[in-house]
Image (cartoon, rainbow, N blue to C red):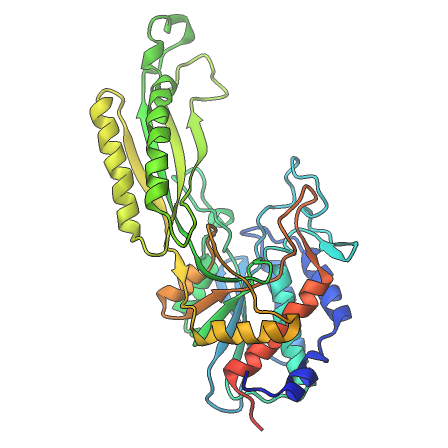
Length: 416
């Protein structure tokens, strides 16, 4: 790194564990499922203003706002963004998720902070804020700007039909889309998704597709001998064909040693309040993970080819389809300045370079890279979730805050 050992030491000595833990508790204790981020937005505005940042409030829609904090540099150096979403993977109201890490109530146990959002990804917002504060305490003047973006609506969910509508279904990058569409344009971005302090050079995208069958709507009393006309019965045969198709598609979507995945995420058919009728319609919903080197149009074409084959095999089944999510994968070059900088800063703090990974989950890097903003995922987590839910070690938070601070100093440049 260009910054000296003495300056790096001066910066990292200003990272304060007690403030990290206190802020982590604060953010977890604010419930903010997708569509209900407003209180979390207000908290982040206060935290960033208290840190001396210029704060912009972007109302994405009523009751939902991005918060953008800018620490102005002294010159025209590069502008680095730290981006993190405020919405949580779950609501905290799910009765089947009983672990302490699935609730919006922070708990410190065995050096780990548990709580909904601590892992994905409120903990990163804490680290961003504390990294800037460490730079300020060390009296560092940067040439370029540092941005901290706390955004709404990143979680993988979407509206569908006229049944599932409203802001609680508007995820999949809604906040970051709004942000970059409204003039917030850094040179590059660090996303603190939970990567276990590994550098994620690439991640898959996603296409969601619905395939449907139609059938006769008949009272149970008159259904004898007509069972095969039921849309559910027909979907049973279609599902067999879909399952037979999946391995080939997954093989075609191998990338960087990872095999693609197709998940059958939902089956809907009939009317639970009227089981005395055979269902006229049954739908199956697929999540196809798409590598960053595969055009999304090619993925849709693969699904359509499958559907055309099904229509030929089952001409009376009324088979139709649609795609209703399209999120491209993202990648960044191994030799990119941002990757090299995180490598060096990580090695300074941890004593060794970080590992690399390619992952099947999506992030807002999909949005950023479409706007020409090179983005890398590198963030705090402490192993996979266990039955207790989301958790991150305090030591991990401290270490990654130091890395973020050093990376900002290196990318933005220090004014002597």
